[in-house]
Image 1 (cartoon, helix red, strand yellow):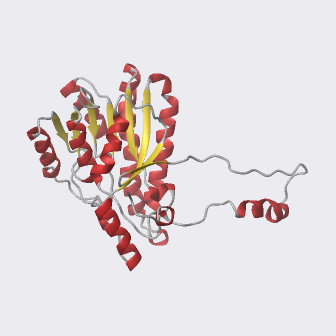
Image 2 (tube, helix red, strand yellow; image 1 turned 120 degrees about the vertical axis):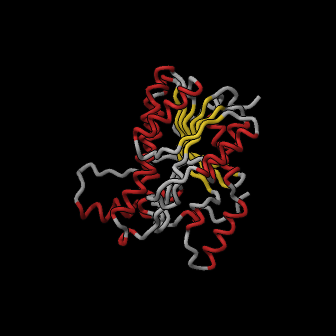
Image 3 (cartoon, rainbow, N blue to C red; image 1 turned 90 degrees about the vertical axis):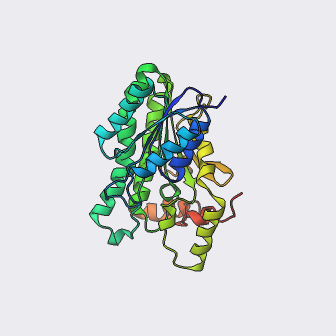
Length: 304
């Protein structure tokens, strides 16, 4: 008996990396699958290749699993609607949507082209909207379902050269939380994962110095997609009670992130002026405000 026995799961971006490992594990845990991948490059924008997703489907079938494949783009609402319908036509049901599909187009913000901004927002944020919007009313009607979406520490903490990616990924956090809040009474859950894993997306990170080289090597050797897949599948399981949460997986570590809440307030009963704010309020915040350290400064230690 697996934790997903009898469940129908849709997984996007399933030809490589986290999506592929999640598909393999979900099938092993008893799920019947619709696996999707456009088959494009890491940067997107090119014509898709169906062969990688078919190879994953063949592997699942050889292992005794049930699976159908799909090569639509999450950026196309009609495509995501068809993914949902494909699950219903093939299996008569859908229980979970897992959406790791993504691209990277890293560039310093002052050099970023509109196309690079729009492409990343389209795949990550608009794609998350499309897939969730296409499934939500089916889940609401049957009062059961869950979403596992993907954020990044680039959005939660920050990394230089990833303004487009960070904006999209932090937007997904907000989307997931509102879905969770609005649908609690309908037994619908939504959570996000910020994964640390060596994938073809991570492999595009430029290595500019010895420190970044060492960090990339740590990720490659100690933070694998199959480790992330364990938590993804657990979040999709019907016995999971978490909703509206932000998790991170780093090697064998599972981290629960906090969410924005006030940490200190200051008031002036006579009212504020810009001068008084500069003299009193802002200095009171300086020692407790977050610094501008990137992800590596928050997780400087070796993964377990």
